[in-house]
Image (tube, rainbow, N blue to C red):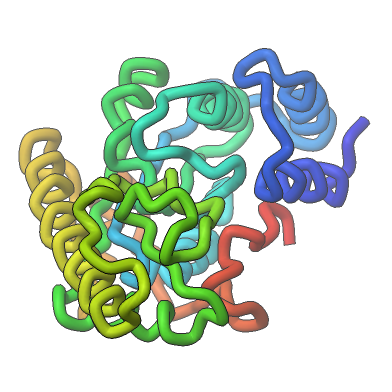
Length: 273
């Protein structure tokens, strides 16, 4: 039978690019056997909770707070494997089957990541009704946080241009974001100032588009929007409790899963700490 350490190790290998067979991945049967041997099976299926947001928006904080507030839960932050923005492939299949299994043993099962936005309908079609929370940070603060991250990196990145490694470093996370510009739109690959300005432009466009699409989904599907600025206010805790159907007031306190690692490596946080 699997151990928690072995579960973490396998998910870590997926984060590093190890391929998955989707719903047929042998790991999933072993994962279910582990849960069946360690937890009682629920009489009713647990609730699926997906938190979306652009990134650089407090996602690790809300993931940590949800884990603390919902003891009977299996919540994660950017749980591997990485999901590609335009591909509903084996990676998405794996995640759906993972949640299908886990909800038999946990009252709340979910994940926090920007990459869920284009796949929410797929998840709901497969698993039924889901709870979706849009964690929204102010436009300017989000933009500057992305730019700061870019400047901290030893190699320049731009997730939003189909550059194929020319002018910017290729990154495993590139496919996890929408492509906003094609490579032939780039006028100069050698001018650093031009590339910096173009990256900032792409980030700005991405944030604006994401906010509009996410809020549209929330409005249409009766989801919940929480503002990062007021995330840990009493009102936000009350709204969250009501939205999740929690029987009592949540223990809703600031926490951060990413205290001992850079945000750049936040996807490597362990499912079972």
